[in-house]
Every structure is written in structure tokens, then in C-alpha cells.
Length: 478
Ligand code: 8LH
Image 1 (cartoon, rainbow, N blue to C red):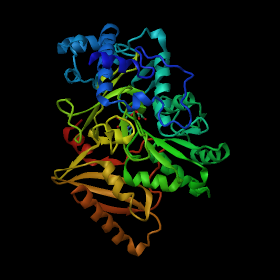
Image 2: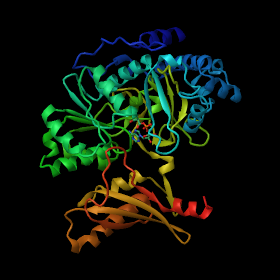
Image 3: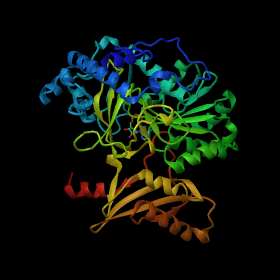
């Protein structure tokens, strides 16, 4: 059996440690898979190759990254003790706070940097709006593996060298933009890095899209909807912009039925979801390949386990949990069991889907931190988005306000309306309330507000206002 698995691992296209890709390789345009064998092989065979790789990655981290050696010594775990994927579940998870603290103690890249600092050729990072920013120190080798991985997933989305890919998210520290950029470039497409986030940029984006014959859009779902709105304001029907496809990451949306439907309808183009976390770039290892909601977990790029949020063991297929990620191609800042604190549900690999990876049918639908509890019911903001954005006369933005009245938490949703007659507004709001009650199992108060009351976002939307936090802070005097 092991001889068979060894030959199978050998025949996996360009599967080496450390990673090394043939940069001239590109499949024939009519071929659906970039690496047909690797993407369609029996999942159990791939898992054997992944186990061997995990052992290599762990041994590498043990030798080169003091952070991991310290952490595993404390936990009494040595890389050689990982004999199967069940053993791997015993490896303690890494939390983002640990990475931040480690970087503060070992500036600038942390003691989880596993290459000589002189090998760091690219720096990206978090924006640091909520705490100390984290720097991503990326070696040239890692930059190339990310480019190759992203090209491969984008190929799966049907993007080809004849496409012009608009990168419409901030081209600064945000790795999302650069991942899309390098992927498109490696694929041989024309890259158009217009970015996003500066005043007046969106109207100019519309103009440039027409002039450049952009066929593929990358950005956040909120921004695509904003772009459609601005195009209409400029007298341009977004469906006339000529897009074939839009692919997304950064926030829930592309797998949320209403949001997805609004984007498809506005642009008359296909929608693809992708994205995990910048730390585990290639972040597109959670990526769609078929034109349907949901994403595959491309396990041979980043090994993804959907885990119980408390004990960090894998949950059964069919169940909900939080993704825990292990990079299989990173040598500069390898991530081994990074805890995401996001929420998803996964399904077992099935050859019927055209790729034998586990499948996340609703994508990532929220962060555990963003989930709130109102009168005992857990509520995800994306479930509210799904309902209110489906309402006829929805004006394009809304805010979710949670507050506390005496001892009871209350939920209000302020929804912009457009084209709803004043005299029917009350009924309009009550109808949305009915739908929310059915979807959430809890009552919400809907407050209609004027069109364009709220700011639009060029990046990731923040729609939840939690007054209880304020009350808690005031109460504790901090
Ligand atoms: C998502 C999704 C998604 C990310 N559906 N939630 O763009 C991908 C990478 C570069 C990115 O956004 O990384 P960043 O800035 O570290 O944020 C990661 C978080 O963003 C992640 O934990 C999720 O909460 C969210 N996210 N892609 C739903 N397709």
C-alpha cells in the first residue's frame, strides 16, 4: 500500500518540498483543471501525501522557527510523533494574538520567521485598525508559490490569459489585492491594478473599466455592489461594462444567496467566492471552481480542518465549525494550525463535484466574534444581510443595531429604501420584520431610512453597531 501511495505522491504534478514550480507551465485553454491529477485524485491518496508533507513542514518549522519549537515543547509534541492525520489534531492551535505578541517581542517579523531576514523580499501586513499591526515577511520562494497557487485556483474559475483582470481592492498592505495580482499575472492574463479606497476613485473605475475592456473583477462583495450603484449614477448600466466573471474574498457575500444574486443580476456575470486569511496565503486555497455558491478546500495547498471552536478537534463532515489552517507551501512564515475563529460547514469530498476536495457549501458565513445572541438566539450578520437585501425597494445599505433595554437585548435594523411610496413604508418594514423573524427565530425592529443615509465601503463592510459594548464599557468604568 505504501509503495502505491508513494508512486501516487510522485505523480502529483509539481509536488515538492520546498515548493518549486515550473513557471512556464500553463494547461491548454480548453482544460478545466490546472493540475488534473492533483485536483481529482482520490482524497485518501492525497491525504497520504499531505501527511508526509505535514511532517516535513513541522520538522522544518521545528528547526527554523523558535516560536514553534517553544510552543510544541511546552505541549510535549515532536514532529516525529505525527503518524497520521488524527495525531495532527493534537498539535495546539496558533492564535492571532500569539503571533502579534511574538512579533512585538521579536521585531519585525516574529520568531516564527523561518528564513534569514535577508530573504524577506516582500512585506504585507494587517491594517492595524484594531490593535498592533502584524507584518507578513514573504520570501521570493513563497511569493512564487502563492502566485502559482492563485493562478491555479483562478484557472479553475475559468479565467484565461485572454482576460483583463481588474484588482479593485486597496493595493497597499492588504495581501488580498496582491494575491489576486500575482495570480492573474502568473496565469498570463492582463492585470489592471486600479485599486480602491481613494476619494472619487469608484467613478473613475467605471470609466476605466469601459476603456480597458475589463472582463474579470476582483474585490469585496460590498464594493462590487457599490460600484454597480455608482455606475448607474454615472448613467452606465453595470451589465454593459462587459464583465464575464467576478471573484471575491475578504468578507461573506459571494456565497450569501441574496448578495450573490444582486451582483449577478447587476453585472450579468458569474460570481465566484474565495478567500481565507492573509496569514495563510495562498488565501485562495478556499476557492470556487464551479459557478455555484460555496468553496473547495484545496487541501494540497493549505490543509484546512473545520474544528470544534473549543477543543480544536475536527468536526464530522456535515457539521459546523471553525477553520484551522496549515500552510503546506510556505517557508518564510509557515502557519501550522492557525485558528481562524470564522464559521463554516463542510461536506465530504465527492468526485461528482469535479474536484475531490472537501466542500464548504455556504463558504465562510461569519466570524465567531461577530455572531451575537439576542434573547438566546445566535444571530449572524450575514443572515440579516441575506434577508434585507432581498427586499424590493432595498436602497443599498443597512445597519444592524443591538442595544439593551433594561435587561433585554433588542435588535433593530435600519434599512435604506428607494422607490417605496411614503404611504406604504410602514407595511414595507413590517414585511421585512416577518421575514427576519422567520429566518432568525427572533424578532427585529426594522426602521426605514432614506436612500444614501449610510456610507458605502470600498473594502470590507462593517454593518453591526453593538450598543451593549458601549454600555459594558461604561459599566465597568474602563
Ligand atoms: C471571508 C472571506 C470569504 C476572507 N467569505 N469571509 O481576501 C482574503 C484574505 C487576504 C483576507 O481577507 O485576509 P484578512 O484581511 O487577513 O482577513 C481574513 C478574514 O476575512 C477571515 O478571517 C474572514 O473573517 C474574512 N474573509 N475571505 C467570508 N470569502
